[in-house]
Length: 399
Image 1 (tube, rainbow, N blue to C red):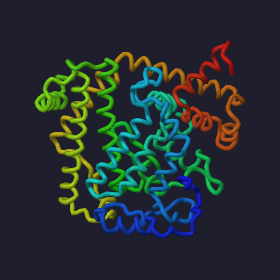
Image 2: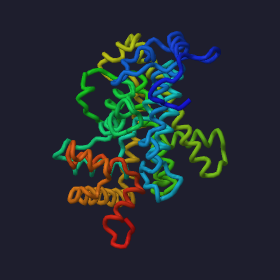
Image 3: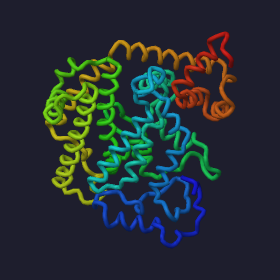
Image 4: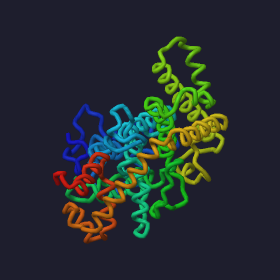
């Protein structure tokens, strides 16, 4: 069976297999009352027949995994550009870590794991090459043409730019996954998308992905920063969350090799934050009398939260990462270099649109050259952008 196929090819589930209807019935019986059930989805922009074996959110997950944009995440920067080493996280490995955490949180809290996984896998599809530096420069280049924000672009990817099905553009994802992409809010993300500007909160599965995103990038950036020697254990000793975790790991397993101890500290931090999150959020749901998805949507604020002590320690850790890792001179140098790559590519294509591939010239004719160039650059991997730069500006490079 082809994953994510546009139309179901089976008339019904063969005897003995777990049908979509049976999965939906299990959701009705087993999920928490405030979880999002597949059969209650608002559906898709372009109507399609249901699949006999997979729920709407399982099909969303499969479509995302098989998309071009998802595969390209393997060579897009998280913090370190791909050529700096094959150990460091990329957008793809970050996405997988977020999906793992989101599924764990959803399972513990009785939420819809398939929906949480689909949202997590889609949450970074709109990212540019070179991480936030690439995004900032594209936003600058597009300042008079609608700007650029990666969550908004992610929706454009799944609604328009992916071309896999004969009956509709994009991936035709469910309304709930699209809404989650449009409302994804963390300290790095503040999308403002008119379609989803309804004053309502996203479903709990989407909120779980938001906090899983924060837990994942805080802790894997610690790991990558230590490996790259941009931050040191002596500097981290002043960070209370790290120091507490270090002392607990040394108490449990004295004498570990340094690298193993570091990784155990990071594992401890992830477990500590995740456990606090689900315990605190469960209490908040009970205190607020949350019983339905409508209660979730009309709540005055996000319901997922850490306890005040953990939030305070988490904030100190994030401040440390901002000051010591993200502003490290090596990271800043790469960020400035990345912005130059993006700016010069953009201006070169703008000066002569015949340098754009055919499909992007078609977008230029329909929506203007700035949007077409923005789409093209945003879809590039780090390596592809670097190769394009050499082709355009190095005289002896093959084109």
